[in-house]
Length: 228
Image (cartoon, rainbow, N blue to C red; front, side):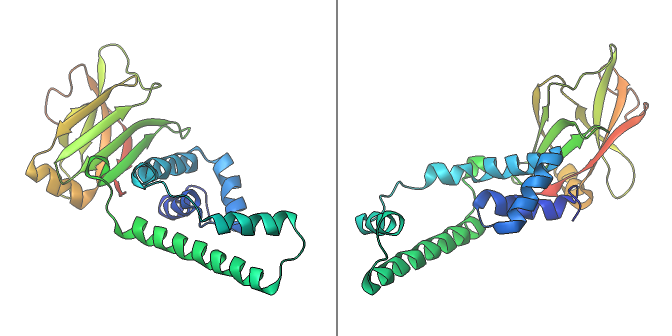
């Protein structure tokens, strides 16, 4: 597997954060993660995505018998057969609880305030993240977050374009720079085209954006929105 295989790494990153990626596969993934900034961002994304569940789950105290069984296994002589059966019971209980958690993560939607539909990360040629883009068809919003390294030359701006299947670029907005964030509302037509093509481009334009409604400067970046 190549560390820059986005879709496959998304699945592995989710398993890594949940804790179901185990053994040699987990060690290989951690090795790739040390080498790949993109992989680290995917892990960070899943940590943020699953954080609402950590905050919403009620706190529960483990049964007192479970702690007794753990202490016996760690610090005592081999337990009688009856105790071993008890340990087996709690081991299976823990496995069933993990299975229930995974089912909940798969089938339970995120809280409304955290729900997002599509995401894209614009990177430089050195794989340095420049912008993070989140789109939600539900409320027709596109959120654009510029990371601190992003800046434009004096008298110029970065402009974001939707690349529909028709091939004619559609201007969406002048992009924020230097850590700023911008949230724009898309039209119904723009949402439909965005869901079809998933393609965005960024050109370098005069200050304030293209004066013609079409790209006049070089297209410096392109990206694809993917499902979250």
